[in-house]
Length: 144
Image (cartoon, one colour):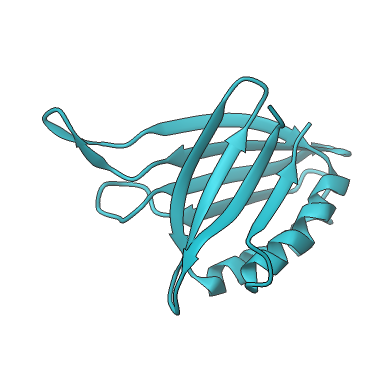
């Protein structure tokens, strides 16, 4: 199983994009879907372009979708941290859409931890920019 974080466009209209977010480490894989606007994706792409230069302790939070049963679809949160130069640590938290189960509403959730490096982030950012602008349907951050 390839360690990675991937964003794949499933569907879009004039207002929203539905993305499948997949996080995979050596032993586990969790996939969920989120709704996000094109403007949010483009802003995130620009923020990542700035963050890539903060290799001495930089921290960047990514939040797409919303957590909780009040919102449609799921949510994705990632904290990117350049703790050591040359190493990017990423902790993720994902939640699926809520659905009926037994006597209530539930959502599947996962917390995962992967690492990458600056050059792999540099490769990911142009892919993510193309995804945000609608030129590509997938962006993959390769992890170690």
